[in-house]
Amino acid sequence: MPNVSFAGSESPPKIELPDADVGMCFIPCVSIGRFWAYPYAAPTIERMTNPMNQAALAAVPLFPLPNVVLFPQAVLPLHIFEERYKLMVADAVKGARQIAMALLQPGWEKNYHCHPGIDPVVCVGTILSHERLADGRYNLLLQGTTRAKVIRESTEYPYRLAELRPLIDEPVMEIDLADERRQLALAFEDERLFRTGIGRRFHELLNGPVPTATIADLIAFNFLEDINLKQSLLAECNVRSRVSRTVRSFIRLHSLLRQSAPASFCREPSLN
Image (cartoon, rainbow, N blue to C red; front, side):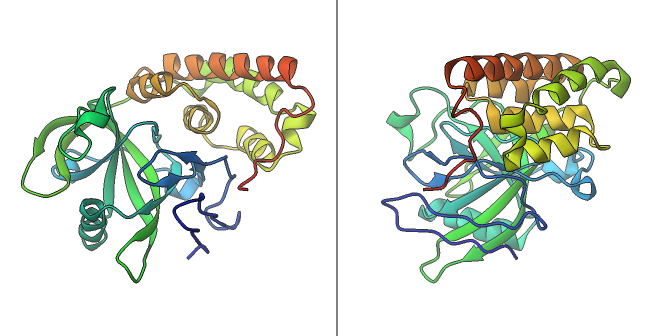
């Protein structure tokens, strides 16, 4: 199990995960009030599975957050301390080990402890590993597996539970994404980007057998900051369109950052 350690609630936790296990890169943390999260991506060929069937999504816990969008194959470390979500994790690890990450809609603050609105498209994740602390809090690693849509919710539990329907991608041949993959490969050959751990890892992925659509999802998770864009990409089932939009956004960001901050662009992310 990876070494996961968390600091006090006044500062973000420090998470150490070895590259050889599930590690790909560290990204600066995002503080969202109720917990600390480090968006983190870690694909391996062995874990790239097909979307779940309908039966597997009949009753999946929902974890709604205001500014985190999970993607298939991306891994999100979480520190859980709210009572209802501690119960959610306890039930999940005893069952199918599934939790669906949902994006809270604007205005969620007024109704956070009840039933705030969420975007109907979610990303189902599987708990890769978890640690229960002495006071009942949890540290866990959640890896996205499947795009899905909320069909109906249950009010039977203190936390939110939903029946989901998997979203099915419109198929596309890898050769039809060759131009987008070439653009990404050129971007990650940038010396400043290649010097970073995340840059080298994406360079390896682009020169290996990992599908372009999977790499695009990981790029969206790691690099794109517009939360509405990310949610839109999560909901997009046209793979060719999704990859094209992701690549355009990343290339635009890459170009802007090189022009505005050439000296600091792509510095190795810091957890401090």
